[in-house]
Length: 128
Length: 108
Image (tube, rainbow over all chains, first blue to last red; front, side, top):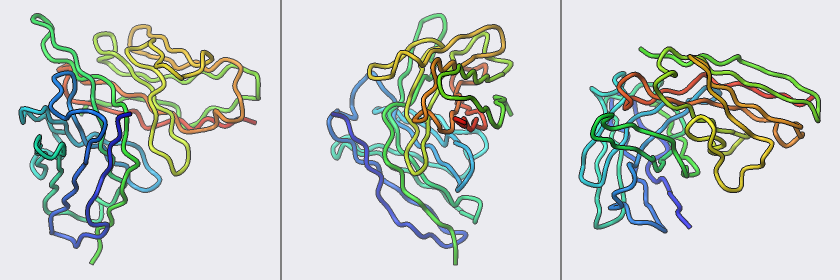
């Protein structure tokens, strides 16, 4: 059974870098069938896609966060990671790691699909 | 930026049918997905590619698509269906993911 588990500091100071790791068990992160992604949810608010990565390292980011985000993958550890730079209180949220389905067609190109499963989420608070 | 619009809230009595809509300009060319989130839990996929139902999801959950709107229908609503429901899709590129603001379903 596929499981995803987020790990990392629960408290980050303003202007510093938020770093989280997602450990995948029950499936290989090198699967050619999926992307792996990060989604966040500020307390009491909705969901926001941060970005997604393929096992080869190909990445796609939310345009609104692109300048501050780096997602990387470590296939040897079956993990992928999130770095979010220059954080502010607005980055306080529950951060989820997810597996993402996709389609690719020679005519239609890449289509990013649904997220399933989700990790349990980890709350990261930005505060001094 | 591209937005998906959902009603903030929907209320139904047990046994009735709930319909939650999600509107977006790119939906005629992009699939819609639906997630259920209960308090303190991660979202769970309920509908994929407009109408698909993952294994383990009750048959009372169904999805449909028409033009710029996708709809989640819950037939014979049960108390356990009370949750926030989010739609998800992509912009016209098919790559940049976007979520609707969420709809709180209240079972009266």
